[in-house]
Image 1: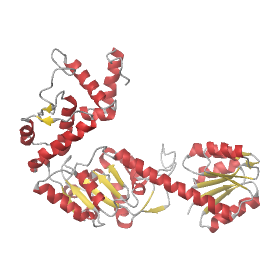
Image 2: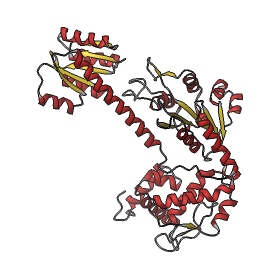
Image 3: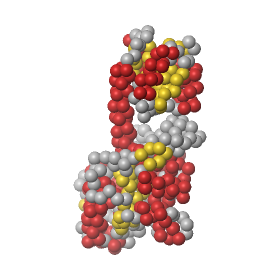
Image 4: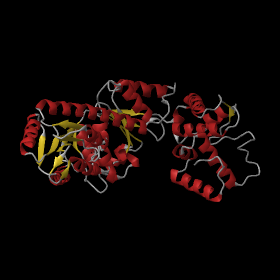
Length: 455
């Protein structure tokens, strides 16, 4: 059911459209002037606007402009008895969804609404794809390992994937919890649906409800348009909630309700939305301890902990380190267009004797930096220094350089290797994007950027 605003100064025409829409199950709001239409739109925030092109106090193009300025997502259909190709083209350019001629028939209304539903379905699919692309790791999956602990973990994930129950993945930071979540989705009957990822730790408490459940226009300062939340985007698929132990109590209550009923309301909204979403959660926190300290709801814990999976740390499966290291070496060599590389004779021993407190994520970053900095085919790794220990003389030769010069060359070299992608370069260097931007600005002000640098 839609909420439809119908604006037409012709009472008979307006009533006909309103009755046809009501008969189709829609809620209708009526306006007889352009000014009233804009006012009612502000008050009711309808899902669709159907406006006459010519009204006593202005034309439908001005109504269209006003509505699109307030909420670009709301479709507007213009109606006229004085249509022309030029007017239709102008209306479409200005953002009209469709353009139909009077006298209107029920069949025309059904046809227009049918086309609108098809377009909205395509837009929703596009939103899901964009969300997946934005959240994707941009690399192949890292489900690599042959140790008994890792094999048992992945085997359990495969069995769990065939169920519909909520899953709680536990383990240290960087151990591979997201990889297991991706495996569960990929092995489930929802694999054709979206996998939407949300890191609860990086969102402010005030924004988390909006991100998960969406919001209506005007729900809070800055909410200029209706926004679908992660639960709506994940409908028919899987929602992965990472760092579930970081969510505040008020959001815990809303999450519990969705898990129990599949229903929720957007922030600032009254409409109850029902979704079909499988929830997979992950945490590195001790939730039982948090329950004892009144930081986590016990009923939510039992709802999440239906099928628990423990991901082993990297230090507990040292036999997987060579496999993972070679996997990352090959991946980053391909990604940066480097010739095939291999580890030096001492590197594997160094890596297997290191404790890897950052787990697989730390190993990946160490190998990534080493691939970027190594000027030869042989890559040497010192995990304690998290960098190569031997770099061939050349562009990265550090003899005679000051620390500031070395830092500048490392930053610019990393930016060149990533094709100028600042966010990616910042992650490799272990600094924030803001810090990297400040360094680039400093080098630019000093005239220290190469002539061919386009940063």
